[in-house]
Image 1 (cartoon, helix red, strand yellow):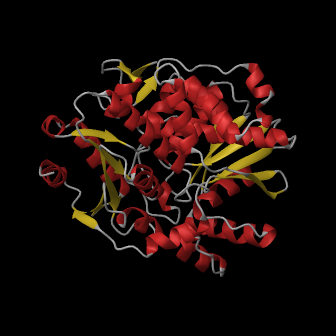
Image 2 (spheres, helix red, strand yellow):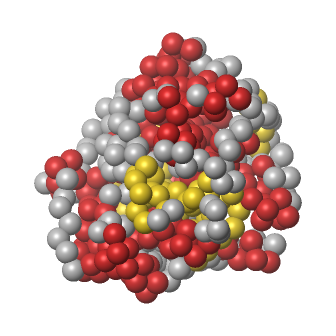
Length: 434
């Protein structure tokens, strides 16, 4: 499979280059030249398959031309050592719990899959030069990538995160690991961290000094495996006889997750339509209403992992549908919620059903409540365990969320981080000394 850049000014790349390089030379995002359709028989029998079996079938359609089948099987089964159940919350609203991986967040699958795939390609190279992964995080990406790559030979990870703008537990999950993980605390917002990463990829001197790639959802190996979730959700809903007129709602920040879902749809996944749920960072919502994409500085909100003012993967969605606003709005609707609305949703859901939403999942739940039509069944993504936002959840709901042991273990570690300005010259100088 070959990959082209969304900016159409870079050479065509194979999967190896797209994964190892991360971002195309023209600053565009890599897109596959074609999306393989899955056969009808797969969907006819999908409810009888396990999460792992489903994922391997999907991965083969994505990556099978470029990765040895046995190696791909090992990568998928090593990545998915857990299930993601679908749980009924209320009436025709269900949640896909994506927080059963190592860091209790949905990005665990993409991060671990990419770590294994990158390692597979590194072993094929003769120079054995260390690969340096740069990843900007507004919350869960950093912890998922850090833990997915922890201890992987030949790879060093730099996690850039905005100072004071991630939850304490999220911060512990990538600042206490050591080994091949370096946490960089940037005095700025997420968009500043993302800009540092993108500028690093474009700097010729820096790229001559060290081999760089990204594990943000700008990397095809990070975002594409997240499609596994949506095929599994369809299978589990079909198992319950609830798969007709299915609507998927995805809390969205950098738009990698919903982009993966849309790729799944292009492969034949029979989802009727999608809802992108935003917090107060409403750039995509405004695009849906007006047809104009106007990035702006991100706002800090309760749902901090979605605090993105210029979502990278919009470029992929725009490209996927031929830059047609009409095509995009025919399949995707949007919703946006303030912090006060998020709090009210969390309280109402907990009172009515006993289900504990985290602030991000609350956006998805409310968007379904507001947007679900007669005869439809909705599934929203609960993207992280509520304990990852314990202080906020406890305060809003007046409860004491139990902290799972795997999170508690991170909190007992010692913070190790490097202070950094948002000035690229400072970041480059730091990396040039590595």
